[in-house]
Image 1 (cartoon, one colour):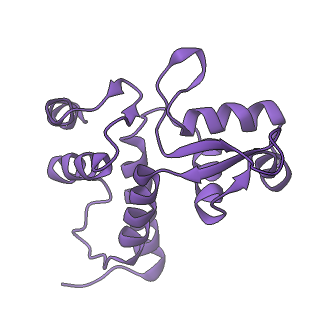
Image 2 (cartoon, rainbow, N blue to C red):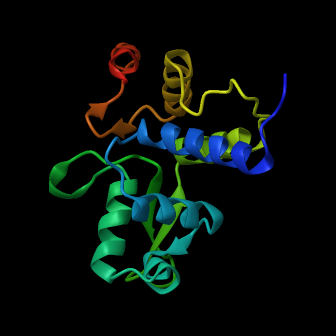
Length: 164
């Protein structure tokens, strides 16, 4: 089977990564994804690092960190990918750490980015991959939620069948 050019393979992998992430929240903005990857690569960073390094307003950094944690604003469930903890030395500072679910997502991103890509490789997840991904992200993290609330195996199968 003939492979794609390096550029095409890169774009297929990137599309697959973004498709995986949108299954955790279908309307996630790019700022949230960029912030997640920054936090993943700087585990334990401060919320203020998001404002400094990513050029976000402090209110946006706070909202984004809420979105990535268990509870989004107005009581909506968050993505459950990070946890905010007060700094031991300065209680005014909040530090951002990956949850088990967040680390799972990072591991999957790395895995996808290293997969070989062929002409017939779909850039989107198929139903089995969606179910497996959502199930595996819940292992050891039973309190995690998606945009529609806590995920159960029945919910995952229903969600997978409803994907376009």
